[in-house]
Length: 260
Image 1 (cartoon, rainbow, N blue to C red):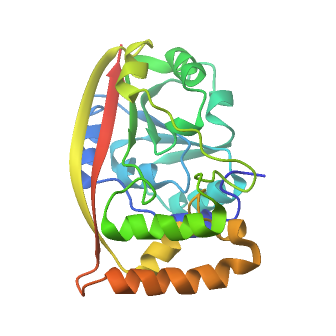
Image 2: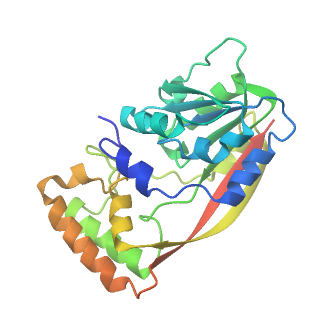
């Protein structure tokens, strides 16, 4: 069973996309490349390819969860002028579609922590162009966010599922403490830049509950027959914290960009 089993439709609908500033930064890495190729690892429902498709001639989408890949296929089906290939695979097991295939940019968004990072970076050394870049990026989650309403929400989740953060039905989350810039610097992509973008989001209570349904730590199947009870309590809690202008999340979206 996938860590994100049953979450794909919620993921596509309720997960925030990448900031416009980050998309412009990434598109700029291939500004002078003819017919550039994008490889998106751990693609989820295809948010990164959707944000970047106008900059690329070819896009390879790699996702291990079948439900997520089906959502990505629907989202990317009508992209004009771009060749899209879908790969139902873990990032570690990705096989290039042709012997001469090379990526000009590799993106890994909100997914590097699930991967065997050294194995992935070693694989990418073999299948990126000499000037290719690898971008590892993300912005935490509502579990890691720190504010009055996110703290109260996390405590409510813990009252149902236990103190440890869940990672799907049968496991708990193992935190990665090393900065991604350090990990990247030890790979073939050791010329590292780090870019940070401040993000301010306003959530409605209903959107937050939809977001929770997309996560590995609070997906509906984890609650069993208590989901409706939890949903009612979560909405009540969130409405109490909503002062009329939405639930504000101040986040930082980080892009770690590595080149040879």
